[in-house]
Image (cartoon, rainbow, N blue to C red; front, side, top):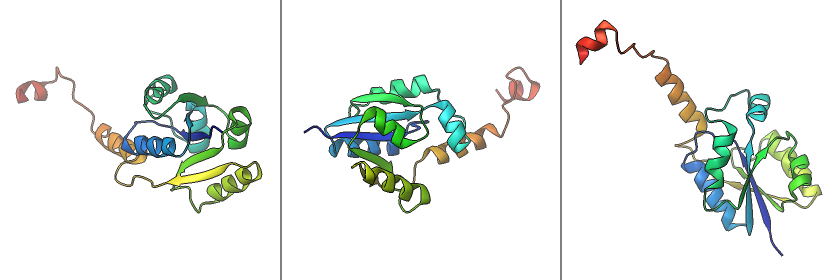
Amino acid sequence: MTRIGYAAGAYDLFHVGHLNLLKHAKDRCDYLIAGVVSDEMLELNKGISPVVPLAERLEIVNHIDYVDEARAEVLSDKLDTWREVQFDIFFKGDDWRGTEKGHRLETEFAKVGVEVVYFPYTMHTSSTRLRLALDALSGTPLEDPHSEPLRRAR
């Protein structure tokens, strides 16, 4: 019997934490589907706009060796996604463990026989930290290369 796993995520600003989640997920299933959350769903559910557009995130994730299939996640309800995909295991970072959303997910998936597996959240690298770093870097406007101070600095 083939065990199908599903690992949903934005996969924006792809980093080693994403890679680790996908690697560990593939170790626990025969066929791994990565659900790449659409731009609209990110804005609706997290209030953020991705840095990397969906088409590019799908292309990146689809070329990860551990991923058998990458698909756009366009439904906000994970059970609706399950009805379409029919996965056996749902993978998530353990930042969801013990949260209200995590408990609700576990309860809903238990009713349809889906196992929820958490993997350690990569504390030193996350999209949130990368986004904060980008914001900090962009907080200082770059000078026009033709401006007087920059020309003198060369």
